[in-house]
Length: 334
Image (tube, rainbow, N blue to C red):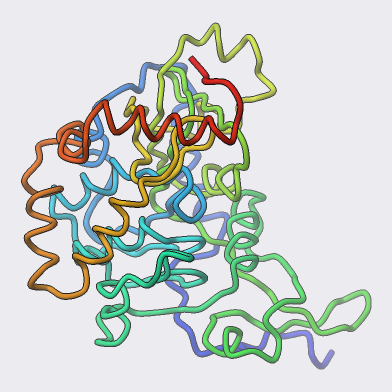
């Protein structure tokens, strides 16, 4: 029957294998045992992120991003990483500044929303130092969902007639029921997901307050998952309200307690973004001559994220940001 074979509408490169059966071969080997997965961010990054792997980063914009883990990737000198730029702002800025990525699925990167553009990130594209495949925000989210569902693609009606579609790696298909034209979005199975949450137990059961964006699908699609949490709590607290558990333990490989782990981003109901420090970042990444000293001071010259926080004002500054957040979100949460 004519029109049943998929036709590529874009010229983009597909970075990850969408075959659910090959992904399932990996998932089949993962333990479902309730084991203590707590460790330091340093150990989690060293153990679960290898050079050349493909990463997915949780959160949305500068909200609930896993900054502590991203800093540690730079400290450890990881290289040749791929990344899904789903809703990436400061997280992509960090990775671009460190020169650790060589390929990216793009929906939203380079911009820090109303704050301006990261010049270091922009230079990656202008100097053709990364391979790029383009998608819309919805398309990347649905690629995760396809993987979480265990299917090789999802049929959609997006990106037709756009340059985004042209530079994607999507395929045009014909609906077997209506004969209408659809776009097949390939499943995306990242090697590693890094997700910051409000609380988790030692087994990896994780809870998110507020919007979860695509993190539930990212956790189920990724072969390895690193959770950083504002607090590690007892499993009794998790079991006391199981409907709030967004990510189940069997998806998770490492759990790291990192207070203020999304700083300088916003952690909903915890602390507001540090707009002064984000402006400092933007000023520093205007050129290599200012960026390298900045990174040496704040990332390469610090042993861990707690030292970085001290350089940024420590407890006093974090309490200021908590007050800013609570001004718009009611009474302080213990």
